[in-house]
Image (cartoon, rainbow, N blue to C red; front, side, top):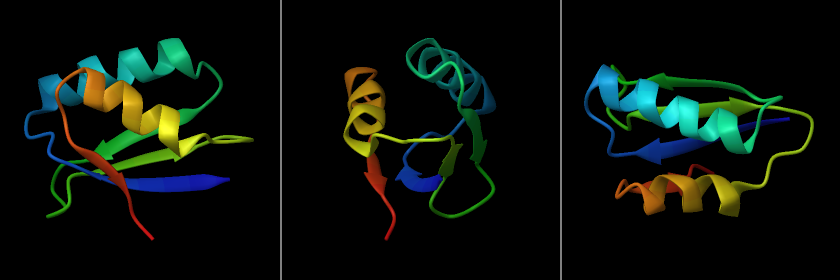
Length: 69
């Protein structure tokens, strides 16, 4: 399963920090950011993804995150 999220992450350093937080919550997921995309895409791949939890992790770090349909 793959989920794609729109974020407001701007810097590579921020993305690295957030990836580590996400890995702490979802250790079996494959996670990456595409900061060159206008939507600052967060892509997560795993067996079962819980979008609300992903959004919660980013929101708790003061970043915007919404699932792309």
